[in-house]
Amino acid sequence: MIEQKNKTFLYLAEQLSIFPFILFLISCSDQSFNNTCDINSKAYIETSLLITATGQKTHPCYPGIQIVSDRGINLSDNFLTLSEAGGTTSYGSSFTLQVFLGTEPKDDVNIQVIVGNPSFAFVSQTNLFFSKSNWNQSQSTVITAVNDTVINGTHSTLIRFVPNSNDTSFPLNEKFVQAEILDNDKIIFLTSVGLTGAFGGVPGVDNVCQTNANCPIGKVCKGMVGDSFYSLRRASVTANLGDGQIDWVLKPNASYFRQNRTDLIATTNNVSLFTFNLLLPISGSSSTAWTGINPNWTNNGNNCDGWTVTGTNGYGGDTGSSTSTALGFNSFGCTSGLLLYCVEQ
Image 1 (cartoon, rainbow, N blue to C red):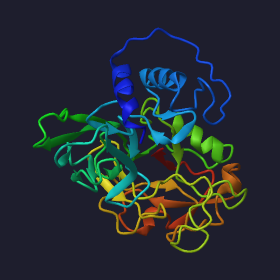
Image 2: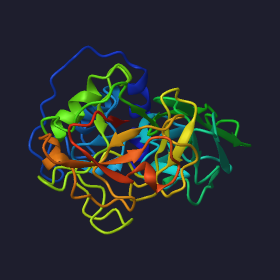
Image 3: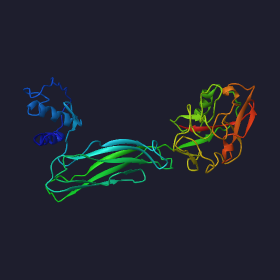
Image 4: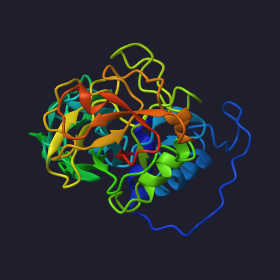
């Protein structure tokens, strides 16, 4: 922590409105006259004031020391971005937030950590306790996103830090952190018309999905196909293991819905594969879609030569099946007009 005698200056700096400036730091040597890095010098205090006023969290000469901007509660961050992805089917990514006090309290300080919307995020510590013996040591709470099964886009929640103490002179102002959470739930849709197996390769398959009217505006959509000819897309080398994936279109621990965005098809496992049976078939009616994927997620050898020609065969799946035949059940001539499974990325 920064020495007590300088904390008042740092706190006052937060209250100032300072015009843009250019700050030049002179070279540092211990205890030199008016040295920016000498805590006993005027330059050190002035530099600390300017740094705090511009919102920086550390001093250039002491990067391991947190700059105190409030005599009460101080937080290492006020805004953070999490994702529903990056964890399990229940939770997503996490962020460790540091909490510390700006001044020594005369009595214990208890800080309650309250998540505004617990369905969006949760914290590892709901209470932080500071006493006269540990007040100058930072404490942490881990903020973790909830991995839900709802397509709700980017959403956010406010996390409150509410102090309580019998020390009436200690600032008991609440502090807040806004947590923005990126959604990982997507849709799978079918193309509306049948197409031959000559798409111009996997990029051509993806282009059909990307330009389809059902691809959400501003999103990327790709085709759920395998390519054993040019090896441009693969879900698994070994049956159902998800190993050796190449440009695979499903994400781990993500929920996938039908085009209406409410009917849940299934949630992938931690290797980005569905475990059959699906909760619902991808389509409400039975048709056939090009896949080039075996029922065990490995690539099938029939894929219209990497989805480039019509003179061979391609493997297809049943769009109305909730079993592994949704991936593949038969081979078809590449001149056939079949659909595609398209996946929002």
